[in-house]
Image (cartoon, rainbow, N blue to C red):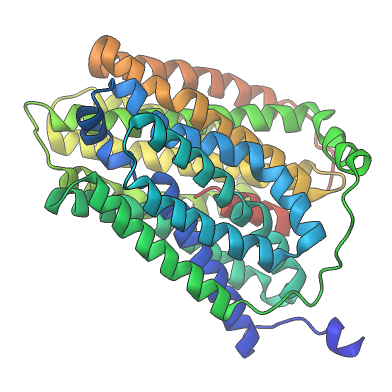
Amino acid sequence: MEIRAQRLRRGDPGFRRASLAIFAAGVATFMLLYAPQPMLAAMARDFGVSPASSTLTVAVSTTMLALALLPAGWLSNACGRTQVIGLGLFAAAVLGLAASAAPTFEALLVLRALQGVASAGVPAVAMAYLAEEIDPSSLGSSIGLYIGGNALGGMSGRLLSGWLAEIGDWRLALVGVGVVSLACAVVFWRLAPPSRHHTRTRFTPAAALAAVTVHLQDRGQRLLAVMAALLSGTFVAVYNALGFRLVEAPYRLSAVAIGAIFLVYPIGSVSSAVAGRMADVVGRRRLLPAGVLVTFAGIALTTLSPLPVIVLGVALFTLGFFAAHSIASSWVGRRAHTSHAQASALYLIGYYAGSSVFGPLGGLAWSAGRWPAVTALATLLLTIAFAISLRLRATPPLARPCSTTSAAAHALTA
């Protein structure tokens, strides 16, 4: 019992192994999830589908990931944390390699949907694994490394796929991302210490349903989930349509140049950290509407024609999104009475459902009215988000802060 009670601390070899393993898992998951985004125009051309249809390659993955989040968490309770993460990573990487050889667009969508299910094991389980195995005094460092892995995976997946598509095609890009993700899966299996503090529990539908229902009964949690859907939906819709705009005249950018625009991601990572610290001082109720307004400002700049101004607008849009998302996600744990993991899962379901539902609308808007229609869609979604932020400002608090869950909700969505 004495050995079991000892958790990993900063400086322990096991701490470094656990943190690096989860870092690798985060890189692989978000690399696989968003790698197709810079190549949507090429996929639409090769398969002869519309821009809106091409965005389904991202939407089906995020949709299935959202649907699989709670089941993956329940499965890890019964079968073990590292088993669910590791097997999910390997399956997602192999499916990514298979997607590169998809003979039809429909086959590609099926493989991407299965990839979303397999990928759900990481965001659903990673934070629970860290919280159980890492000493609370060192948990912040491991969480920070996981957040970095998510951000790096989301950015590098788009950059790598854009570069490989430029020297080959989108199929070569998916092969490259799949190989790197498979290597990350091997790193996870080699480094991740086994769960010593997780007690496997039998799944019971009644207990699982009760844990979810308690959060659905809170209006604040419901509003935060809707906020997550609107923010992520706007973000994905704009980035989906951006490639179609920049590949046409007068810009005619290559896939690698379009992928390079994702280098603004570090701005979002910094803004999320700064916004989180400011929220502790100024308050989330005041700061969340401000984050939405900054996102508005970024969209406004993209309506202008000069390419440097568009890039500046995208950077400001990204900054505002990550700031608002960080504030909203950290609010989830502070409102949770019990079962904080379930509260975070509900927020993540809203987040990925929003990107799945509203994200493809960016392609539809582009086909219907080019960039003015895309900005009109983004403005509508952000207007609703701003109204909800004001409703949240008037919603009374329910529980004392829970810093671990706040960080967890942010880490799972970069």
